[in-house]
Amino acid sequence: MAFPGALNTRTKARKGPRGGTIAALDVGSSKVVCFIAKVDDPGSIRVVGIGHQISRGVRSGGIVDMEAAETAIGTTVHAAETMAGEQIREVLVSLSGGQPESQTLIAETAVTGAEISDSDVRRALTEARKLDVSPDAELIHSIPVGYAIDGVKGIRDPRGMVGERLGVRTHVVTAAGGPVRNLSTCVGRCHLGVESFVMSPYAAGLSCLVEDEMELGVTVIDMGGGTTSMAVFNDGKMVWCDSIPLGGGHVTNDIARGLTTPVAQAERLKTLYGSAVSAVSDEREMIDVPQVGEEERGQTNHVPKSLLVGIIQPRMEEIFELVHGRLDQSGFAKAAGRRVVLTGGASQLSGVRELAANVLDKQVRLGRPLRIGGLATNVSGPAFASAAGLLAYAMQQNHEMPALAPMPEKSTGLWGRVNGWLRENL
Image 1 (cartoon, rainbow, N blue to C red):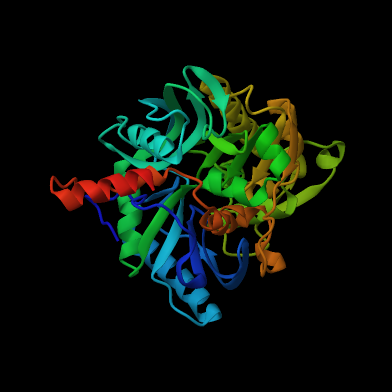
Image 2: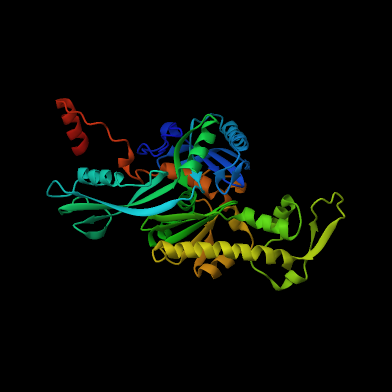
């Protein structure tokens, strides 16, 4: 594993899972999930090990207590290993925080022959790899999203076409170096290597979206405990992503403060009675609210459900308004189409789908993991979309730049020149 200092985790082209076993680790602000899966057939995977528990030491997608986070990750991975009957060495890790930045970069190279060949495409991707990103950021994704020949854009596969200059548009996602290194170090202290980092909404989209949604345009909103992250898919690829430091945990804290109840009770009230939209019956329905510091069970307040909803709704509206604003600023609002898929634990709150449709003015559905075998009912909902998506990511063949592998040092000798020609042209 490349540890802090040399942490570009995307150091090699993915050729598919090695040894028939893949492992996914979703380290969130509210829970930690580990899936271990076996590859049954090409393109088919089956989950054989599952571990999940309440997260510790993580806030807004970043590590704030290394010891607590290490314990939570280690316990979760051990449970999955015990169920699977084998130990794992490397994991794919989801990333929901880290202040991700999404940008589209363009590189261009001359075509060497009469027709564009595989070697021309490889050289264009190599040029794209050389494009500058912030030295303080860690490269998370580098995805070719389109090609151009002599300035003509919108080309999916340029091979076999005729032209003089080949360009490649690349979607590059970076994250702040500190949070990524801290998470990598924490996973490393559990004796695990990070095979790749994957942005949470990207992973969630890979597990929940159908092909038509990815082609026509869709926004995935992954609503976690400490962050809400979003990604736009169009033409079969992720073209933009972002994150805001608000999530379901902030709603819980609002309830705890507003009703002066313990945080655990606030989470219970949110789950049992909470809603993101008001109803006529809310004024008549009364709920019991235990008070902070009161030991006797009889010391509870009886409040109308409308008071609880009145705390939840403004915060959820704020989250969707921020998402709406970020999407408008991105320049990808049109590419996103009119479809939204909600994932993450916070998306399961009653009324969230209706509120999102109203604020975003789009068609909204809840996303659940698709095409992943072996998932029990209690781990197959929207809250586990990112973890399942990490497994789907592992099965993708050459979905990101093969040019991200380290460039070999050129040799000036005869055999070095021969090998270089073979690598370039075969």
